[in-house]
Length: 261
Image (cartoon, rainbow, N blue to C red; front, side):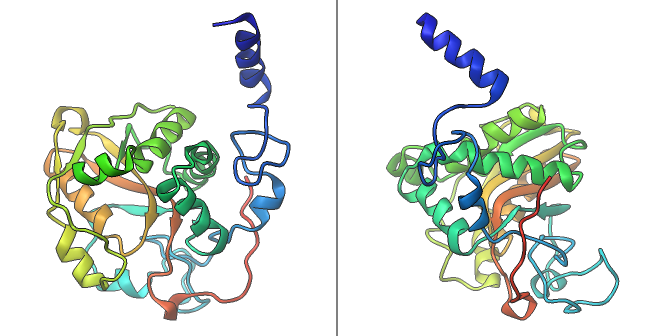
């Protein structure tokens, strides 16, 4: 490594990565979105489902603050303890996920991971977790895409909050295809038993932080959590960059401000 590169790395460690916003190219940090790009992301703000974290309409599920449950979670037994995400899967947040997943813009992963790590810390999820595990791709999809976006995010999040990553803890032994056109029950039945834990010794007796890019119905997260629990994990928390509005009756339509730490 050249002296210039060594100096550059040292400066990045001390003052943050230099360069430009990974989303728009404006001058700034390569590891964080600029202020203009952050302002375009719809952020999750209270009230939100206490289980899956999806935003709720005020008063949609009761008046007791902190105990609201969305329409989908009221009729579902989740294997995970709770799920949280900093962003709503709409607008700019959806574009960032698509850029990462479908356009291979892997340079945006550290910025999304930074938002996820801050969300986990604020939600009190980072401290009790002993390790991070990414949601796996089916091998065929991994071969086509060339990378697992969940693993990229998990690697950065684990480093930021100071827990080990177990990248091969889970595998997907059944290909379910795209889930976007299926309803909640179809998704759940399709993926609940699609995952196996390949490293039970790594998760046994531990609280696991399961990481993915987006939480929609929660079926994939439940399938992974089920496999981890069956292999001895004590609890599973879920962290994603974005959460979809699972039921439009729960959605708070008015504009929401950014959640800052």
